[in-house]
Image 1 (tube, helix red, strand yellow):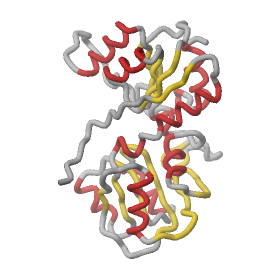
Image 2 (cartoon, helix red, strand yellow; image 1 turned 45 degrees about the horizontal axis):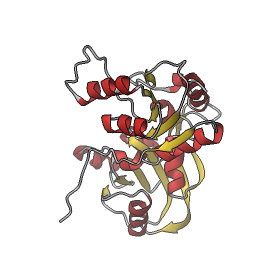
Image 3 (cartoon, one colour; image 1 turned 60 degrees about the vertical axis):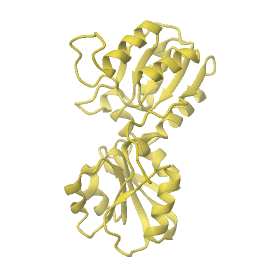
Length: 263
């Protein structure tokens, strides 16, 4: 199998044309004609991830976040992006990113996996971009049983393996409908309200943006890494089901750059 076989299959699930205009999904480092010895899936691609891939016999990293997001004018190791690309070339490790195109698909996408972690039912896109409801942003679904807000927060923290949950004022309502959006999903808040959700789970909320809940919904910010971390397993499952002639492994590293002190 060649790298192009792997990336071609991934693009049948999340076509590259579905990525946002600002994005840089696709094959970032590597020759599409190279034979694949193994694949390592991860949320981020860093120097450590590239070195882990090489040590575990993988010459292709499939990551959610693109390591190169803006144009590179030099490759002299001045920052972690340049060092990662240099290390990948040195070790013969290709890097492929499947980013907002994976955010924008209904099936086997980032938001479906979050909804599955929370055991939501009757899933549908929060903001559909086509009539079939197969392309769009976010996800909304129902809990198997109504929960109190505090019980939901506790469950959310456990299921999403979050150290903390930043949230707006609780409204003393039962939670039955939940909206989710991996990463920075604040742009979907009004969609979450219109969908009748009592809570909106996402990340990267700024202080003043929390006021936009306006007593209508509970915003739950669990952190960017925490919201998307299960994408690593999702990608491994998708690839291992299709390809059996090489190993598909998930990273054993935590790439979250954000740490919490709770003392």
